[in-house]
Length: 414
Image 1: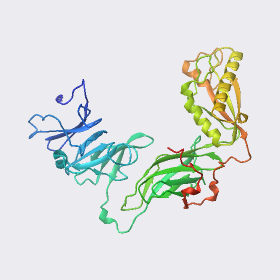
Image 2 (image 1 turned 90 degrees about the vertical axis):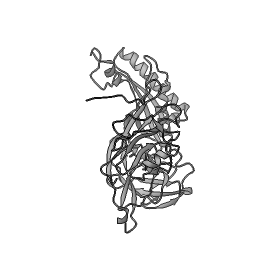
Image 3 (image 1 turned 45 degrees about the horizontal axis):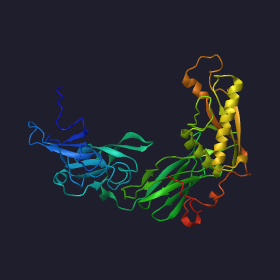
């Protein structure tokens, strides 16, 4: 194998990546962050008359393609199109896939065409690869599920096969956050910002909900149940007439906390310096999330602090008590009623592994036992439900004026 370096890159100042070549081997397109470009990464091309000749110097595509954002992952197809992804041009979010005839791209004419849903989504979509010259089958990459890059195949059906209007639905799941079990009968609200209206859905036995997609809009989706703490998120839905009924997947699962008396969970990212109990800056985001939960849910909790076995049991008990009290004091400073939270230091009395006194353990094994936990001790009233709205008054399929909801009801969803 003979490998030769092409004269395009400059390792001291820029990168050149994502090469794409036409079938004839006479046109090469790539992405580069070289100086004097439009933005982050721009698309460039090089031409030659025959494969036996050297490549010409790279030239940038025009402003109809390159933007102040990133243009990456070009692909030249058999039917004469340049496909690429951009995170600047109007789309559904993140990197979206666009296409333009190669001949138009080289002369700086034409407007790139945005590929509609379900090719593009609110996540990153890139890496277009066609299976044949028709462009009706192929593959692309997307991180639309769980922020992980995965390969997807596509197959277009001719639009001419559409004889009657088809329906599009948004489907998602409501799950218990701790166990990931489906929650039946939860109420899900979809606030359509374009319409300024709220749609209602109830989850089935599998925790699934469905909303009709009637237009392209930003939406806020919020799940509510009297036995759980709500969850919500914002995103975009896209309406495109399809040759058959289609289902758009929700951007993520809605995960609800289940607060039964005795339920205990560990607070993540709550760390203390050795032999100290002052609240560190890196612990505040997790504690602020707990503040939001306590302000919304009428629960009484115990803040339990645990240490590893290093040091005497009495000193560990005192240290853990001070740490628990520091957390409680922080919560009180953020406006949580002190009557609803107590501090309990358990020291080394409740180890989670073998690392008792005299047992050799690694630092990582000891750290398993250093933790802060929240335990539900009771409720401030007989019912564990948000006081702002009763979800049981709504039925599946309802459409409601947004003004009937408390002011700011959807403002905490991102």
